[in-house]
Image (tube, rainbow, N blue to C red; front, top):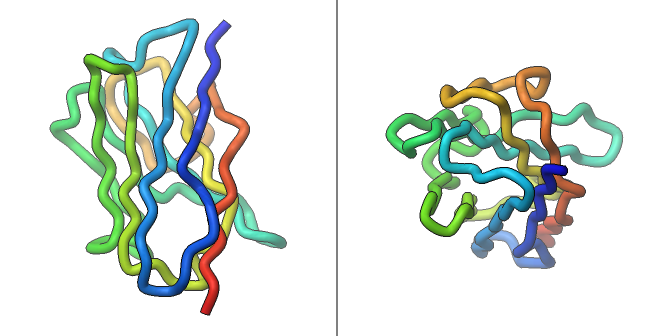
Length: 124
């Protein structure tokens, strides 16, 4: 059974940084694309960033470009989301997800494996 586990969330002041990690068990990440998504209260879940199997291609939502960076360590089956210059509107539950394919997609319907999420709260 494939399981994804996010970590690294928490409370941070506006302008601060956090790094989220996503690890997997039951199936290696190294051949598959991984995405980060978030869902704020009362809003639909949205794609934030995604990375292809090798790390050579990435996607960012316009709202996080220049502030977030997605990366992966295939040797350790971990995908990271570095979040800088955080804003209160970044507050959400952040999820990582993987898919059965090496290319990234910026939409959740392409991802079949999901973590439980980690809360990120940015105070003004």
